[in-house]
Amino acid sequence: MDRALKTLLERKLGTSMEGPVRLRQDQAEIRIRPGDLPQVMRTLHDEPELRFEYLADLCGVDTGTTFQVVYHLWSDVTPDWLRVIVDGIPREEPRLPSLTFLWKGAEWMEREAYDMFGLVFEGNRDLRRIYLPDDFVSFPLRKDFHLADDVARSPGGGVRPMERAGAPKDADETTLRRTSPGA
Amino acid sequence: MSTPTRPSLDDPALSIPVEHAGIFDAIPLARTERQQEFYALRDGEMLLNMGPQHPSTHGVLRVILKINGEQVTDLDPVLGYLHRGVEKLCENADYHQVISQVDPLEYISSLFNEWGAVLSFEKLLDLEVPRRAEYIRVLSAELNRVASHMLYMGWFALDLGGITPILWSFAERDEIMEMLAALTGQKLLFNYFRIGGVNGDLNHEFMSRLGDWMSRAGAQLEAGMSLLNENEIFVRRARGLGVIDRETAFRMCVTGPNLRASGIPFDLRRAHPYSVYPELDFDVPTRSEGDSLARYLLRMDEVRQSIRIIDQCLHQMPDGPVSARLPRLLRPRPGRAFSAVEAPRGQYSTYVISDGTDQPFRMRIHDPSFLHLQLMGLLMPGNLLPDTMAIMASLDPVMGGVDK
Image 1: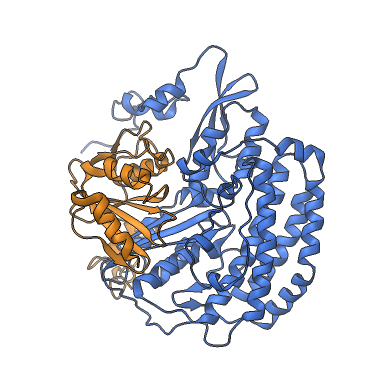
Image 2 (image 1 turned 120 degrees about the vertical axis):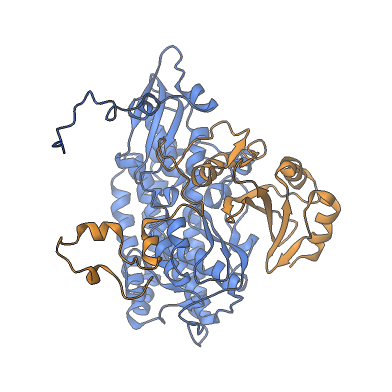
């Protein structure tokens, strides 16, 4: 835990942050609004006292109600990882600014977040699917996208549809049902 | 009730809608700014498809090259042929099962995949790992790093047209793999690390093989390197090829040996220490040239450092348990944890969110090969067609990790 980083972030970012700087183990965490992202990141990257020049990770998160985009940064001024959470991205209109103007390398990570969550990064000049085929219609890491295996955990289910399809036609119903859901 | 008839090809329900027709064409519908730029051919340019099955793509990678004569002017990598949706599978597995899910990602260095995952779970659980377990982890992971770098040496030479080095390096790698098989029970996907420790203590076969190997590893490595380092064809070809400068390296989020070959001494084992690395004495080698030759030589320097670390681990190995006692079902308190390990290819990190149940709410896996493959688009334009594969081999991506 680096308490000096906490006061430094409070001084440099001020009201751009939502809520306090949270410190836990070797991670410092701040939350910001989508609109403040370019300005906050530019401050973190360019300010000589902060020097967060290395983007360690970029990922999307579906909380179930809204989306988040989480950035992890590293700097030689602190032994901690800095986690920047862009919070409260609406599900209906998941848009936020792209960071490719600071880190060109974020381009593919943003493409991945688009592919998995449908997050639209404005300013990314190559925002298209990266893993899944171009004609795929849904976004698989969203919480409302269920795997076929999830049937196994639903009450009364228990066997994957593909296993059921491969079973003999005259199979007893009880052999197609596991004893306890999720077992 | 009418009897079903054979479907007719004129049936509008069976024809491909116009908006989807693009994916079957050689040139897809340009949707993004970058695609419009890429698919606009200037005079003398043509598109060349390479892959997805190509011996030197190190997995299943398709690259669309835009070439002008023998010169590559632009390229567009197409990923996803190995995509297994591991992040989603992890969200549907419990914390112990995740270890075997992440194993096949970077299959050349599986122990680091496991380490990234267990490290973040241990942070979530605030768990203390026994010191003997930490030493065994470092020992086995450094062995894995040597095996991975040896394979790199052979691969790189193979992509430049040399056959012998891969035979030599496979002999080394195979010995290490046999050793790790004696320790973990598996030869490729080890499934050895556990939350709070490792799966089993060091055994006699592993130790005797390791002692045997350590007595000749240094000499063997020098012999293998003399095959390439003094080969004029190899050195002249690799020198000055695909130069990454400091600015580009940071801008493109490059990590690991590729970053250190550009003169930046960033190694997570020192920059953000984990496990028992602070107690071990080793150097972080760097090179300033940033070209393919520097990336190769740097990895060979790292092998020497790894052998130093293994030697220290053997001498300082403490006694004690190799695993913390944990319940079968883990329910960490709600929270978030991020951890990163220095894998042979760079920073391998995991970000895990717990919601208090026995399954991770979100499990993000960040693989260095993904970002190094992205660098291809920057390094290759301007080079000759046969050099593209040499540059790619020097960056050492593994498609299993890229595609997740």
